[in-house]
Length: 546
Image (cartoon, rainbow, N blue to C red; front, side, top):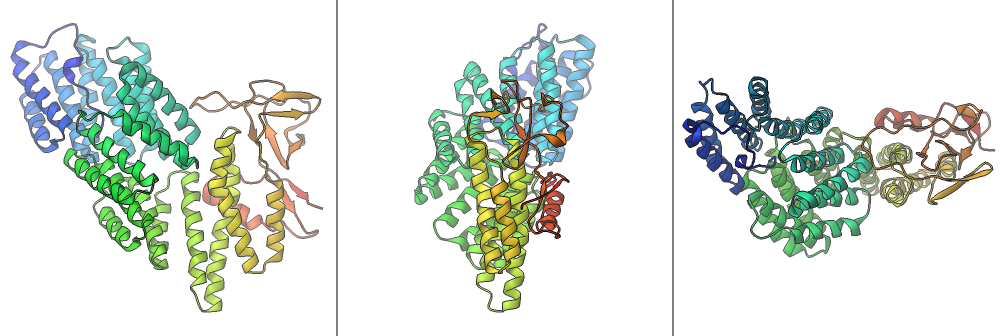
């Protein structure tokens, strides 16, 4: 559910007409019901307020109508994202009409910005991430043009929402920068809001392989929440404690906490948190050695999800279901679940993760297959998934600035894919492919140092500024063409090597011919990786390895 703001906290220059005070009080009471988790009663009362405001030319009543529409949209979000989006659009239209008629005399511009931010969250639920991110830019434009009440709170919301959307999109470095901006903003507005930033930071740390940081951020979030919080904050507190207990392998405690978190989420109409809590509960069963119970819980969860929305939640649930069925030895069902998860991925990063799990499952399935022909087919299927994952992951390293985060992310996906590819090539006795994989491994570029010497000058190459915007690369300070740039560990790097603030990234390395007179052995896998993941794995240039 989107964040609730008490409408009494936003006061315009003109007061609401006295004839509307009773409806204002009814509206505020409905908002308090939303905050305590009584969504059904709040929805009914907000509809009654809107019905009473239908026929009026009083602009101050229009402002109240916009607020009621926005809060009703928030209530509907837990049951019908499409209806919530429609109601949010009505709130935007109403607030815009007030501004056009009387300017910001009633504080309607603050309502408009909140509606734009709410719309971004609802669009994300409808699997429209690009539109959601664009909506935040529109909201920030209004914030930058006007001196608004609650501006700091709304800026926090913008950063926090964008961070969550960027996590879903797999743009983790940008998501981290936004989460830290949200954290800074929270400390200005209300330190308790930092809980949301810490949870995003924990998710980013987990996705980049830093389990210690993930645990620390989750623990901070759990400690920061007070026991006197509203329904949303109370649910987050319990869920955070469940995750801390699970990370410390206190499974009985984690199970109890996730069950309680799910109860609180259901009571408050927090659909996303309900799914996350139930998936967490299934993960507890999986990690504690009960995959059958995990699979049962996950199937029940998936059956209750919105097939037109809940994309992130369904992807997570299907991924865990694949893990559970694989542990049960029900490999066909695992493959079915992994395919469903793959189809719900919205970034190359997430697609790589899912397909790596599929490849590992195929290898495991092969070990239980008695027939040599079918066993070979499954080993080959695993190999044909693992190598493109390996190649794509190496290419995706360029999405991260040089440093430990990039290396951890690579170790989390590329290293297991490389190990699996080598193991399967050996098992299949494909010496030519094994040789090509060795050549590829020795040609992979890795930058661990903070300074790199290039040419006659030693230039410090720093990470780009923390900015969610597109990177701009300066032209190389050389007369050579781009094709003639010197390679770094067989991979070219693009950037201004003479500038201390250069933005460093790797250019695609060339295709390597390992055996004279033969095409590159990895050619088919390169093409498959580029088609599957939408990344440029190799340049069109071909070089000999001998």
